[in-house]
Length: 180
Figure (cartoon, rainbow, N blue to C red):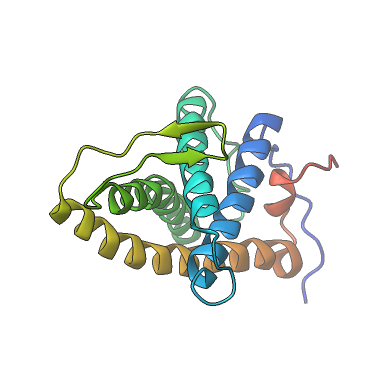
């Protein structure tokens, strides 16, 4: 096994770190609720929908913030294929963090009598102005995208753990709250 590589790669900003871990926690919670709501977590769909809308809002804010703040470069020792793979995975995750809530919102908006979504009981978010066909598409897409998100989150976590425990290249620590 290789010894630790002390990377001089800079860290993500505190704002980027808060966005990352907040959205990550909400996505993982919502994947669990989405997968288990019929068997173990009955009555959690209103919470699932509120979390989904929160992920959507935070992701849009994260993207807007990110447009003015470039991420730190990866360590020089990371090969081009790995850089490309990491970039592609991140872009797909961003897409899913927008598409998942939108397809879920569409799914709920196409009911015979559309109802607003309560955002944690604080206010209502109106249904999207869509028809039954778009809601059906939203339902199918939401399910497929959910399984895709689950697989890609697992790959992302595995890659981060690989960098931390096997490669010891400092990639994971760049996104940690601890300094040093």
